Length: 340
Image (cartoon, rainbow, N blue to C red; front, side, top):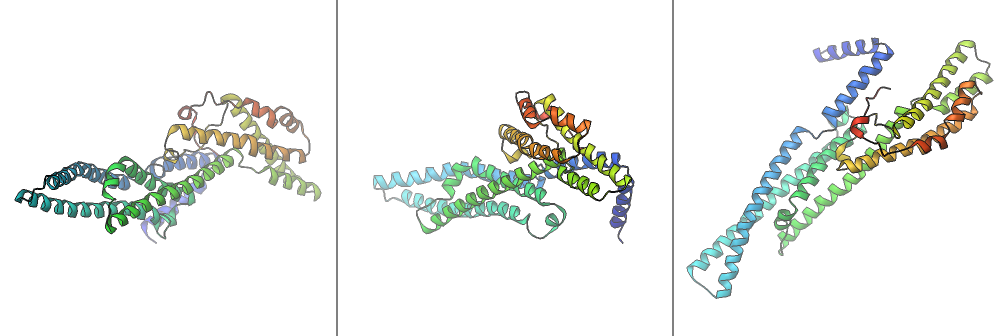
């Protein structure tokens, strides 16, 4: 066994020996750290590569002006009817400019396609697929495409000049650029939907880690089988945990008017804080209107207790909905660590 394997085994043993409170605290802290530092930000390698692409396109934009000036000289010479050595020189310069234009177009095309290949490679067999789950892979892939889209948007003008022409080669280049844009846009849309869905599920599991339906089934089974006292005590503890979930959500909404995010949200997911806030609002309403309501309905199948009746009376979904208020929403201030 390698040193790294021994270290991993020792770390795993220590991790398992931690008590429940320590386990939750450390795992939550580590998860947030990994997300915030390693998964959510774009990779330094991709950022460095894109910096080179930006630099190349900025230089190319300056060269485009020179190419335009040469072309203008040619048109002026033809209009004046000159057939002098000066015109021949201009013609030679034009041919050289055309060749340079083609070379630069091909070079830039390769750079853009390399970013697409990097994004595709995330889902290919390899270390990323082996070590990252589906949402994390989607985040990594999205970040690469987000950087590519930034390049395409910032340098749209010069790309339009490079990837355009009346000849067959120019038309093929234009189709290639359109294909890159289309794949980038389509894939980002699909990834965005995947990530929003995964994030919503994560928030739901954060606030309702214990299934009310499962606890109701366990209570019914224990009652029907006349279970022993130990099992009944366990089930009753689960019932109290379920009720605490409702109390937690209700009190959080009553205090803040909305749910703070329990896990970080990929900022690039929306391209701006305003749309990120819209996602947060939708998630809050999804939890309040759908998840909370569905879980709440199942409480009626539990044996009535004083605590249960109090929750059913005071914390009904219609009462909770009245407390929702996004006017005080402040993502940076309300963000809380993942702790359960």
